[in-house]
Image 1 (cartoon, rainbow, N blue to C red):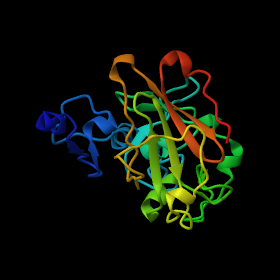
Image 2: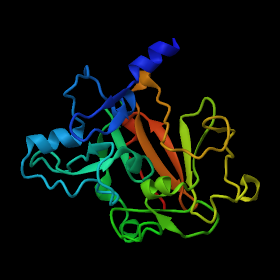
Image 3: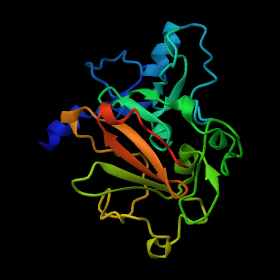
Image 4: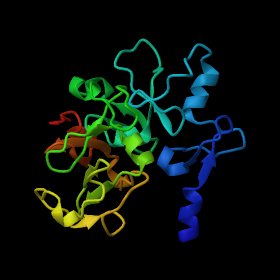
Length: 241
């Protein structure tokens, strides 16, 4: 069983940019050969006029596990992309199809105040930032910058519950013991991995029999709650951050 799971979610490498992704995590449905290209590299090869210097619309980082952003009008295919990691941690944003892991939805509804925040790590006002989840701390940063800087990033959930709570902490509060942090309503009984974790990625459990979408709402600063919902309840998606 273990070998079967590993085989179905094996690492695949883009023949162009050589970035490696897990097959299921990136939503790769087809058989992967030596010439397989990620979504970003495929778009670049298909559209000669695309600006390769501008990749993720949510952060300043180039390359990586990028997926197309949904276009709100019908004038053509989207030319914008975002990192899957960035969109998982952005409260207003969700993924339409969690099997294909695309397109990325609701980017246009990210709050303007979030877009104006300057990242405490890269010092750039680019894309959108989140704030530290510790108490009243207002330190802002790009989620992907926080991951690369080794900040504490947690994914919390409960057994039998589709909700997942995301917590990201600044450098100062990444080393604060869990017991001294401000409490949260509906205290989670399960931290993904069995304890409070420092995550290098966002593992989201998906119930495959109801074709859910990822929905994220915010509570108390940037303690984000991600909800696995069906298409019927995703239309009222809101963020209160």
